[in-house]
Length: 347
Image (tube, rainbow, N blue to C red; front, side):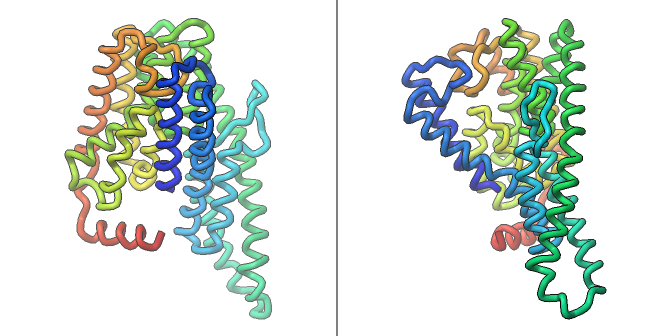
């Protein structure tokens, strides 16, 4: 998944930079207002579009080998597309990062179980299993499974949105929650619920919430990049080589740069990133930082209200996240390093 995220993210970041240099309006079309920027953002978006399918596909393959590949790819694509369900506003709801993880694991383990079931069928049908029986049954399972998951994600999004609205007067607590939510699933339904809440606040003229949302999304890649730079014994060689790109991803407000690291060790990486993002969001809200642009990262700091403290909030949040990674992550053993190298070589 990493090449899709890195290359696509850099192209999107270039689109923001070009629009900034050309003086394009920082509105909902920021990054697409000039032809060259639109080209970079379009190509980068296509690359990003493969991310969830690749993630789920290779999770399924790692569990059930080739039979798990189809169910994972289709499940990941359905997670990205939101299947056929719509939210109350009539827009497709994506199951996001968590939905793709769920699709990969559920599809992989289902196919692993189904392979054992098929051990008892007549040998005359063995040639049909990899080309017909496994794909058909797997596709039917993952189709039903993912269609059942999306309404649950919609209910979660609606519930989170209502809860955040009820906290409108508790500014620092709201900043803490919005910032932390941006790092929980890094592009998934919880992340999107916080982001949509920030967008709705911009329309109402409340720009402080969008500031907390964006800084919360910038912290995870930066925290991981800092941790890889200063605490090298916590990461594999492959992770260390890829880490510098996360400085660019984080500064560009592309939270997805942290996904490969979160997927490899979710129980440690995600809590550390959530704490760092929550601290950054709370500081941003406490000092009344505002943001009128819906995206752009460091490239839209020109329209950030109280930008010096916003920069302080970003640095503090990233450092806190990196220190939490130092505390929570264990040292990589030689055996773990060897296994990671074998997986990377196979990929």
